Picture 1 (cartoon, one colour):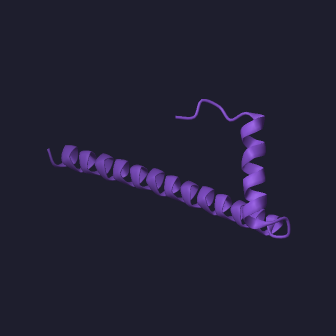
Picture 2 (cartoon, rainbow, N blue to C red; picture 1 turned 180 degrees about the vertical axis):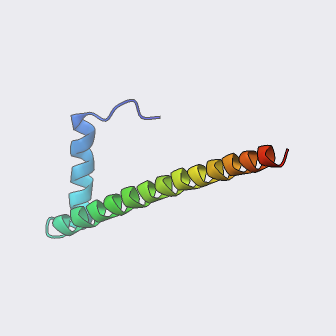
Length: 73
């Protein structure tokens, strides 16, 4: 979709943001965007940790059931 964003596109985006929000609100907008990105990354890493933990626990259950099956046989 987007091949690359060049300096002209960034300048255009910045001008639109300044017109839309005004110079006074720009620091607040930047801060809220930064918080949103941090929150998203934190949630994403927590989700990955859950997947790893779930995968490890299901692998342990499989190993335990194999051990139990061989002991019974």
